Length: 294
Image (cartoon, rainbow, N blue to C red; front, side):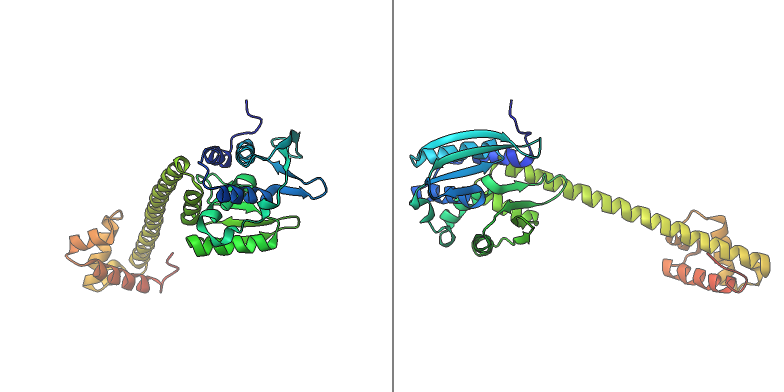
């Protein structure tokens, strides 16, 4: 049984573990993403210690090191301050070649670099609840270059937030999130996200329609109640028979048909909706002489 609860992010990373390796330069570029997000270099011992939360990311990292024939000297699973999480500490041999690659000038290298960043320091909120993808990145220069390259290569708009102990790159637009995930090799999970986004859009459209109908019904009910109140005030204070003939006819029909819309009242009197509305406004104006019409 996995020690980590399978979050939405972890499910994405499980898929990324199986993305085929490209060229040796692309593999090194992906490893560089791991180093920039979660690597701690010990120059003296010439080792790198990776502190990862994801078992999927740990497997990918071990596969990268194996491909590059770099020995892993230690793997430790430790508890973190969050009892629901574990740290997987992986100590591996360091090589100068890891830092030679420049991933920001070649799209294939940059994609591999992004994959390493996301696997080691990234997370994504379940899109059923919220659209948000972020990556922890401590180096300010790497953050800025990553953000610029996302825009240059994929037209992805990313933001940067600086907290007390960390810096994060984040993407809020679901369109940009989908482009990002597709670029780093996500396929199966991408289809699920696309379905969720479509479902949310349909539900949102339905909710907006229902809210509109409800709001319109409330406005209509309030408007009708105001018309009835006005007619009754006139009836009590001056009598409907003293209204001009065209207004008297409208007032009588409205009193007898409180449930009808303006359009339906108009049909009964052979008038347009706007004509009915205008005459009812005149009736309300007259009624305001005798009291508050609300």
